[in-house]
Amino acid sequence: MSDLLQTQELAYAPLFEGVNLTFKEGDRVALTGESGSGKTTFLKLLNGLLDPSAGLVLFKARDLARHNPGAQRASLFFLNQESPLFTHTINDELDYIFQLERFRHLGPKSAEEKQIILNLCLLGFGQNQGTENFSGGEKQRLCL
View 1 (tube, rainbow, N blue to C red):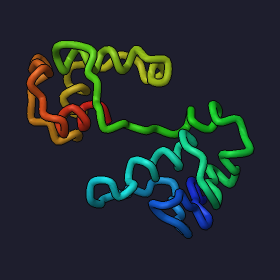
View 2: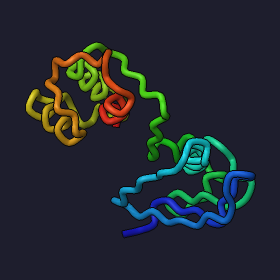
View 3: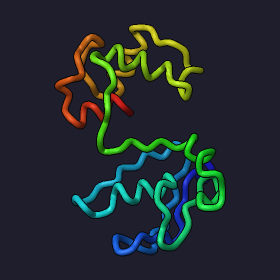
View 4: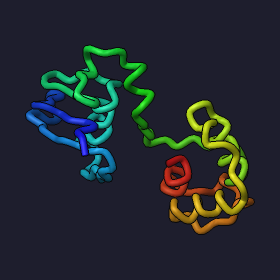
């Protein structure tokens, strides 16, 4: 598999420096650390939302700083710590997501397909479950 995302001597002073990582297509990565250790900052650097103090972020071998960031970001997904839900039920939320331009090509989903999605997200709820009392983690899993 080809390199999808790579960092070369990435730095964001004073949080970290000299970070060299390579993510290949299909990789699943967990970024963990204490509060304030730079996890969100690092993700913003990878997505081109922040400029590094040194080093490079390459997406499909292209330097994010030198190319149209909008075109690059269309292929990247960043879920912020705050996970906004716009509707009242899981079913409504899934309908909303599949109407977005980015996912419209996937078409509407049947009730069975939606339940599969919920099971994959480790949400043991029915589709008519309200989202107003979801924990932060449950909201993030649904957003993902």
